[in-house]
Length: 211
Image (cartoon, rainbow, N blue to C red; front, side):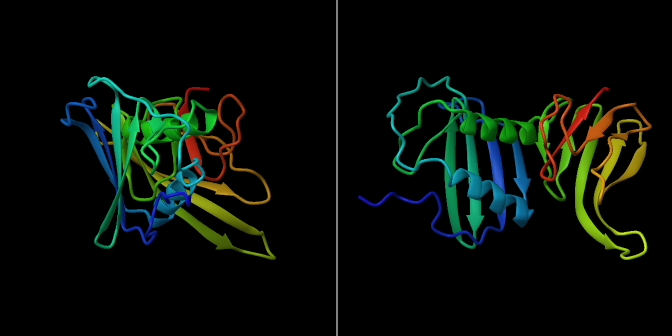
């Protein structure tokens, strides 16, 4: 039997992530819409690495945690349910608990509820609300000054706090890895190369911490 694919159309134009109150109550607690095609494609490719048949059939109670991923491609909508941190497969089953799905869940959770210490994916154009402040990743540009000084990838962010202070942030990576960036307004540090516990997160994630 041929495995059913996760996606039949990959020309994605948007992704909506919705956290519902529970599996039985579809009141939306938090929703985020993403229009960065590069990130949407990367997330879809990572989901496709999950075995599509699943090795378990599970019944959940109505109070189970429920997140919906709605991938839009043209007039087609591909919806994926994440229930109790497990991804419901195209065969309507689930896979045994594993670190891969755990990391994917943590990534989605960080988009919905960004916070200090979480590993947050770089999603261009998405304003992330950390409570007392927001951060928006605007993308990474390539700056080539070779042979004089070499070439750089410059990740650009915008910080804004509740007091109206904004700060344009540019973090360069070239022959040397990107350095931690200290936000002047509140003393927090943005890490883009290694996380605080020394996990490599470059070039797809960042982490906000106190050092």
